[in-house]
Length: 145
Image 1 (cartoon, rainbow, N blue to C red):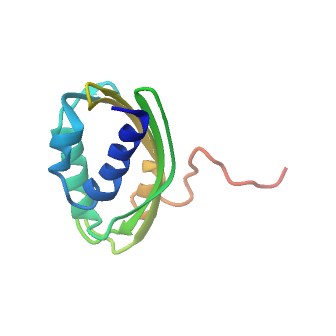
Image 2: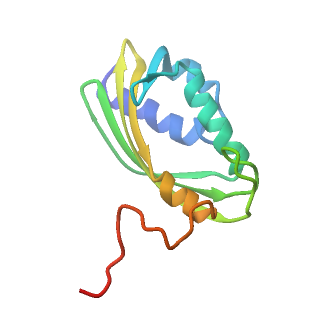
């Protein structure tokens, strides 16, 4: 596959897979897929998306940037939704969230074999009330000198 074809597969996952077409995982991911170093296979992305769709059934994804070179694609997204279902054991709060993320995908033989990803889980948990707002994340707000 070309770099642009790889980038298109990544875009499809975030536009179609994230909004419910979980069978797309069979087409895009290798059965040997590793995410952040852990073997998760095709079920890993499906499981994550099911969890997100239960918790945030109105999930929307904005693709902010995509870079493709060789066998790698880097994508930066911003996803949003309303917490109206259980998410990772957290009961629904009805709160709206906006969560940035970035991922590096590696392709081999036309399938994704490796993903390294980070989403701002701290901010997500803060937005739904699991982490109190007074606890600072990585970016500490400016204060008096």
